Image 1 (spheres, rainbow, N blue to C red):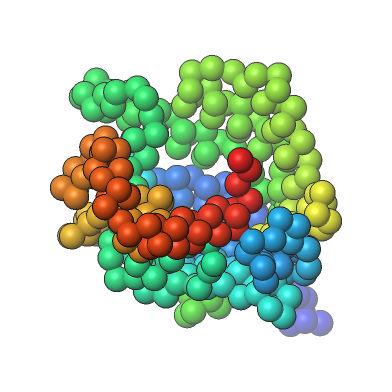
Image 2: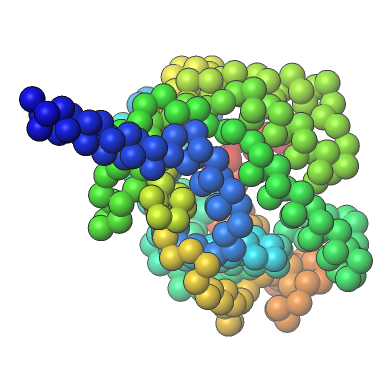
Length: 356
């Protein structure tokens, strides 16, 4: 009897110690948010899927494309660097599949650094409104600074302000409980690593609070009444967002995230799913601008062959469009050839449903 009693007591002690050494899911989530906010670099394998009703693009010149079940799938894999500012180097694809007749796929590489986007495509779809084949095998640049009318201030004073903002944002992220744990699946093996596996849902009130405070930190202002209404509407539509997280037992880092939500809109129900794998935290990353880069000019895609619409003046440096030179090209063109080119251009505009 004494032996049995000792066995029972020993078992209870072991059970108590095991329970005491296992942190609560809420503490693990909180530690994870803090650790992830301190990470500067990581590798990312990202998959994003949208499923619902999409236009069936069998006739690109049609103005009333019917809606049928379809999907838009994005898959990217690469490295991310947020030590000073956001930068990434990814390879991936975008696939648009609707019904039995529409399937468009784009494959390539994409980089982002210093407020500039670089992309190079290896596979492009055939479309009636633009010739995308010329994008293959060439690096193109899109400078987001060109969209701003205000001069760019790159002074040290501005850099220090940005550093303060980043610190405040990291602190805000650490203090925000974005997720509520709805189920603890215990410890599992993920690619040879012991991780905690939790099922979670969105904490709507915390997300709203985060958006308000983030706006004050980043933009030094409060949300307008209109923005408040739009934010509440958006978060309300995502109240059913559910997901799963896999968090390292030893380092409290996030190694896998899966979330999904179904939203009702004018086109019907749309399903959004995101799956992301993270790894190689804080390893050295060097993201450089590609060599032999061209400025991206959307107009070139819609111009018929033989008509030049180079906004850079052929020098690779931004310049005003030389309208006089364009008129000379047209003036010296054979009338029949010009008519043919204009008809092809008109078809392209018809495909974009341009109104005259």
